[in-house]
Picture 1: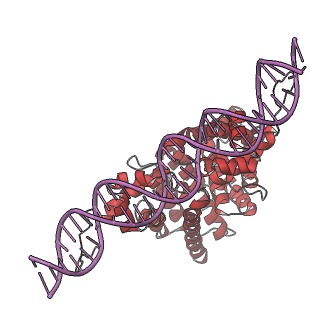
Picture 2: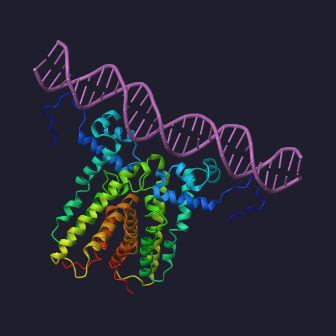
Picture 3: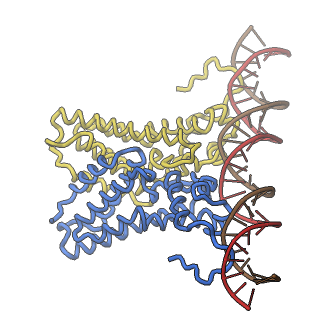
Length: 202
Length: 202
DNA sequence: CGGATTGTGTACTCCCCGGTACAATGAACG
DNA sequence: CGTTCATTGTACCGGGGAGTACACAATCCG
């Protein structure tokens, strides 16, 4: 991905991905507004000047961190959609959420939820970004359940949109519970209970 | 409640409860750290000096606001516990959450969730307060389901603690969905779906 | 070698944050 | 009336927030 060919000028002394990963931990733990530039650059091991040169500003850094989060710790979401039955999709999503939000080496909870649920006025772009992020996740699950519906993979009378909203709601709830201190085991139990709400055909 | 008898000195020119109610709206919408003293006192219609004289400081104001929230907009929680069956308790709780988090005259979502899910270091007392608030809610529901269990009001093999954690998880998820823009109708649908996870005996 | 170009470190800017000092105010009480 | 005392408004405080100016360092290219 990194292409250094033909680059002129002084070379960057840090790795972009490593810096983003460090910033992710901070935003994840403290939220967009709770993370100060001093917190961020301290964890990234670079100065404010280098951060601004490489990423633009705090908001742009957050956007890149959210993208990294989506492809990294939250990638179970994409993978869940590829399961072969609606039930397996739902289970992979909820179990993945239980796991990803309780890892010991990362902050508990979900960046997409606790990163900017509420903000001051100046933080509204970040808040809007995560609103879109959550809505996109819901839409993708709805589309997956729509497909399951046409494939006869959903019980009769089960509405794909309503079911997707329900599963996403449980996933968000799991994120809040993780931030509150619940263990992966407890949250896997929640996932199992939640899955009983549907008479999956398989 | 207010006892002005024998009070000496210049009388307060504003109503404590009205001021707290105004502060509640601000904390609810912007979170503990997202709400500045200028935001708060502006909405309360008083000066910073009056706020400090009446409530102590920002953190103490938040504690009083959370108490008011518990007795006011979140009082459906207490009321739900008094329903006569476990199923009715769960339904009242989830429908109450769907309603309270989507009122047009108040911010969407739940103060207990979005008030301080993540904070900077200086906001950790507020964050801890809401962690306790959420844990207390879970404990009360668990106790209610424990009672239901001894009364034979829960299906055999249904664990009160696990069930309480599940219901609370859905409630928190509803709060996140409300903050994301979902309507009361959609969230009532979520509540109905969630309730199907248990074979209530009634 | 000598630009041109890009990244780095220091030292700053401006602004808003939570919190407070202090004098003026207005009611109760003798 | 004058004393007492909690409340009020103004004007301020130190600190930390995001963001930047500028000189210097390190590489590429000719």
